[in-house]
Image 1 (spheres, one colour):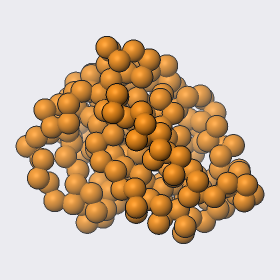
Image 2 (cartoon, helix red, strand yellow):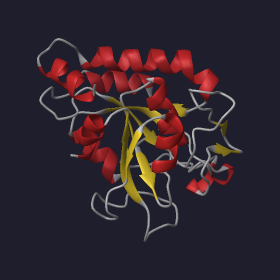
Image 3 (tube, one colour):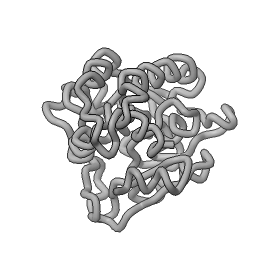
Image 4 (spheres, one colour):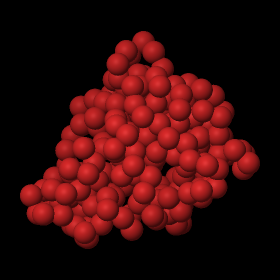
Length: 215
């Protein structure tokens, strides 16, 4: 799916603005029931869509960023009410900068348990994220917000990270493919205190889509 969308952007069949608008529409329609998205930058994302280089490997793909990773102009709360008033980040985290350089468009942030410390996604700041396959169950954690959004089809791309199962647990719970690279292979752009374990991962609806992100 990701490769197909990127190809349609490259050939001019789709404009990135259309992909962003559809992602925002899906989030507005589906997220009230799931609570996967904790913050949006709708106007900024639509503006970014006008500037995308269609030749990028992720050109035009809307992406949600797990709320452990900095996005310039947005606070990073790490799912903790202790950081409810955190100042907005002044710069993008490493993975966000790479995603933007590849043509992806940040539309918002996804929910995570406080400091990514549990295998289910709930916190006192934003509440519980629900599994799109069964709203009475959790999507797992700590990348549960991203996994729920992907499984529900809100966005084609969402960042995930893994220290002790935080990619693999939500992927399993939501019927997705999750990939944890060798620690350090793609950087450790994750805030909570798992420096020897945490790494950025890739999660998608298929192995082919994981490879699009991982590359």
